[in-house]
Length: 212
Image 1 (cartoon, helix red, strand yellow):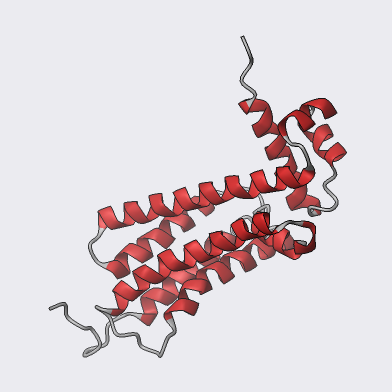
Image 2 (tube, one colour):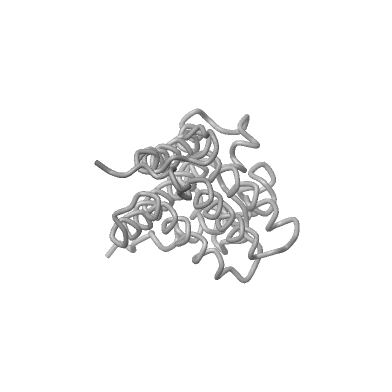
């Protein structure tokens, strides 16, 4: 009976991702991945023809995971409240809650690492990374547009860049967490973003737009 190679493939990808986040893609050689995973070179090339194939598999895995997590958090938020502002606040709070459990500095962002070394990747791999950011922005933007129908912001705001702000804070927090060796840095930035949204759309006496 043929053995299922899923566990070995996953072990290779986990080892590679850890190395890439530690050293960057160019420094994470195939030999280093093999040593970290505790496999033979033949086993590596059985699962991945090239290092580029491995990179594509890694970014696709992260993209699928992140998309599923966003939808799970948003679905939970939508089940808990019918108000779009409360929904996005709850969604960000769920991310904050999960990240607050970290006991070591956040390891970094695979997408950012790949973008920093964009010249090493083909268009297909980079397109996956770009799609992740675009999909996140579109999902958050849709919720913010629903918020704007009910709440008048205290300051002028561009909703697309407000949606992108969550990505900017997260990516910056990943760096901050590593540099300062602070495992709570990323959760704290999600908290700041959630607080900002709550303050931005907090109704003034005449600021709330009542639903029809």
